[in-house]
Image (tube, rainbow, N blue to C red; front, side, top):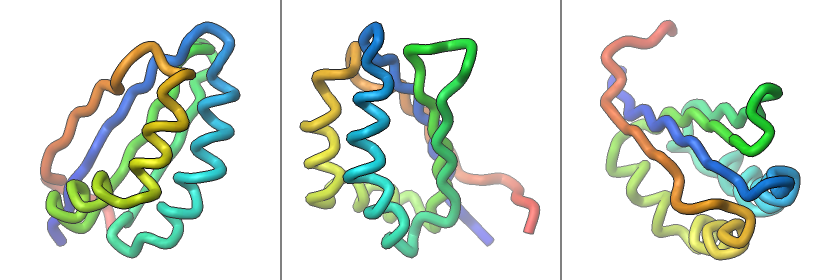
Length: 101
């Protein structure tokens, strides 16, 4: 199986991580659950980094990852979460070289 991995780190404004998480729960969580091209999605809130959110996504293809960024849900999320973030996320993407099945 081929797949496309995406690693994302968000830096939130001080004390605003819970607000960013609330936006994610309201908009992104249902959109991700409904997207068959999201094979895996892990959303993390590191205990030792109170202003950091990390996510790991595994898509069927890089095209599916790019297409998700154009959905109305993602656009709404980006607008709604922006006031709670220090800036754009750090995003690293690459083809999955191996996966446990």
